[in-house]
Amino acid sequence: MGVFKAYDIRGIYPSELNDGFAYTLARALVVFLKAKKLIVGRDVRNSSAALHSRFVQGLVDQGCDVEDIGVCSTNMLYYASRKGDAAMITASHTPKEYNGFKLCRKGAIPIGSDSGLKDIEKSMVGNPKQSAKKGTVRQVDILDEFVEDVAAYAHGIGKIKIVVDAGNGAASIAIEKIAKSTGIEIVPLYFEPDGNFPGRGPNPLVEGATDSLKKKVLSTNADFGVAYDADCDRVFFIDEKGEQIAADLITALIAEQLLKKNPESTILYDLRSSWSVKEQIAALGGKAVVTRVGHSFIKEKMRQTNAIFAGELSGHYYYASNSYADSGDITLVLMAGLVSSSGRKLSELVKPLKKYYPSGEINFEVKDKDAKIAQLKNEYRDGKISELDGVSVEFSDWWFNVRPSNTEPLLRLNVEARNKKELERRLKEITGLIKE
Image 1 (spheres, rainbow, N blue to C red):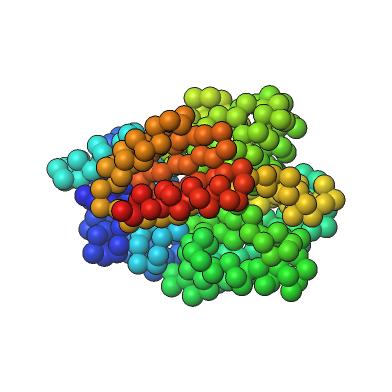
Image 2: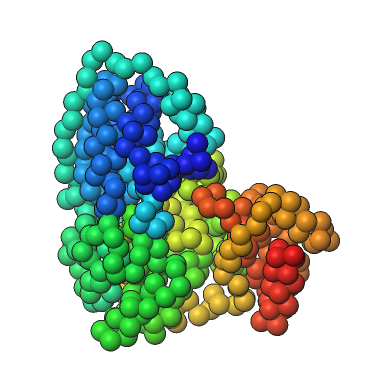
């Protein structure tokens, strides 16, 4: 089944993934987990209600009790999972015609391709025998306790104004209460939950998606702006000048905050991150450890290394204190505290980290991704090579990583250099090799 990805399930509704699929998946999941109870949530997509209905029915028919937390963000689902195994009906940031499932064990431990998804897929083909005993369904409201949990991360927040772009997704469900609880003034943008995502689409990284946010930051004289993806686990920042800040540099800023309270701790950064991230972590006395891309891999690596925090270029930020799960809401609160307590503008805080010249992630449609990666590895064999995720090659004045997407039929390229001229030369060179 093509909808089973490296760390979740995702496909176009209803051609690739439909209500019958949801029902069979639920029953297979109960068998795999030997579950007596499962916590279930769903995002705002138009197809989520139908998938949710059949998924819950499958759980009940397989003898599993359901705690239904209703429409929520992935952040809220991960919080709820502290009490048990959980499932979220969501396709994260993908276009509106997609939907899917994120599955996790108690404590937000993800069920990925190497930790159960493949077994669940095989079990679905066998269509598990239905339980003689039916499960029950109970509606549970976790909003207030979730807000209280996020608000506990608020430190040093004085007068601050933030434009929050919810993108018509799940972010608006909790953010107003979080703001009220922490003293943050927010200016709302696209707060109406709508599965058609009329404001700017579910993915804030699409070109032009944050144009309205940038204008709103400037017109309201806000301290900074925030754009969430549809399920609220990814977050991106716009400074007071209307400039978007690369997510890896936000990792470095949050690392500074956390290392003050947790000296010499381990912090993970994904292999697409700027050199400045690991240099900043090391300069602050922390231990910088590189990791491959993907939430299930990062959470596992955090547990292995006892890391307190991890950041991804894709805008995911993970906290050991949050069951090692990612949270856009916690990240917003921490950044509000950082900017407010520093007495400096966000652009000023991030300026020292802009030491190098990154390309940003560039996607290519390639017929044979493995062959192309092998070609690039051979072409640049004189550099320091790592195959942690795709292939990374590092030289004294530049580096690159090229890797296959875990969720889409794409090859993803990142390049960084010590000067602009070198970046342009190497980017043109590698792009030519990929396209030939």
